[in-house]
Image 1 (cartoon, helix red, strand yellow):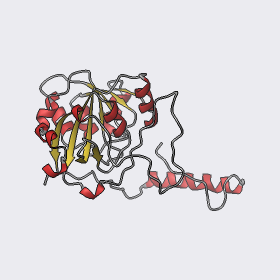
Image 2 (cartoon, one colour):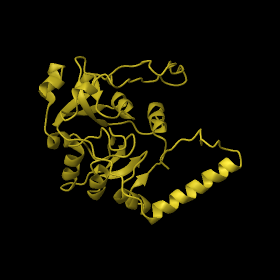
Image 3 (cartoon, rainbow, N blue to C red):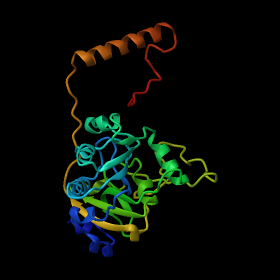
Image 4 (spheres, rainbow, N blue to C red):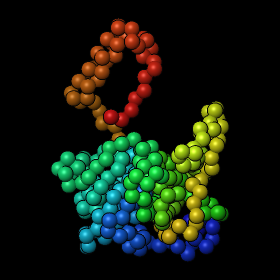
Length: 265
C-alpha cells in the first residue's frame, strides 16, 4: 500500500528511516519545511533532527509557510536547532527565545520569503522537507493538506526529503492547483479569471533526482483546539464590538460590516 504511493519506481530505493534522513542535514543549512497553520507539516524528520541535535551541535535557518503543528517549533527550539526562523511562528517556547535574542526572526508575509529566495536576496534552500500524499510517475510531489511555500521550497531547493503520509487519503490528489510564477522582470499576470479555473498542476513539479530521501509516516495533522472564552478574551471582544459599532455609526462601515476580513495579527 505504501509503495503504491511512490509511482516512480526507482525512487522506492530512497526510502529510509527518519533518523537516516536526519543525517543529511549539516550545520548552518537553510531548510524549507512544509506546513501551514497545523496542516501538512512533516511529522517525522523534524523530530529525528531534534534528537540528533541532542548528541551533536546542529543549527539551521528554518523557513516555512506559516506556523507548524505537532509542537515542531517547540521541540526544535528546546534542542537549539533553530538559529534563524522565517517568516511566521506561533509557538510560545520559540517566541521567548526570539524575544531574548537567542533566535533571529524575520516576521514577514510568506509571499515575500519566496520572492526573496527567487531573487537571491536570502540564502538558497539547501534541503526542502515536504509532506506528500504521493509521488507521481514523473516524480511530482502531491501535497497533503496544505501548500503555502512548499512548492517554491521544493522547486528552489538543492535537495528534497519527502515524507509520504499514508494516513492522508489518496483522494487529496487532484485537490491542489500548483502554479509557479516566472522570474521577475519577465513575469506575466497570473492567468486566473474565474473561481473554477485551474491554471497549474495537481502536484509540485521537481526534478526527481533532487529527491534524496523518502520517509514513510502515518500521523494526522495536529487538532486546532479552541479554548472557551475567559475574562481577557471577553474584554477583547467587547473592545472590538465597540469599535465596529462606532465605525457603523460614523458611516465608515455598513450595518452588515462588509467588507470585513479576519486575519492573524
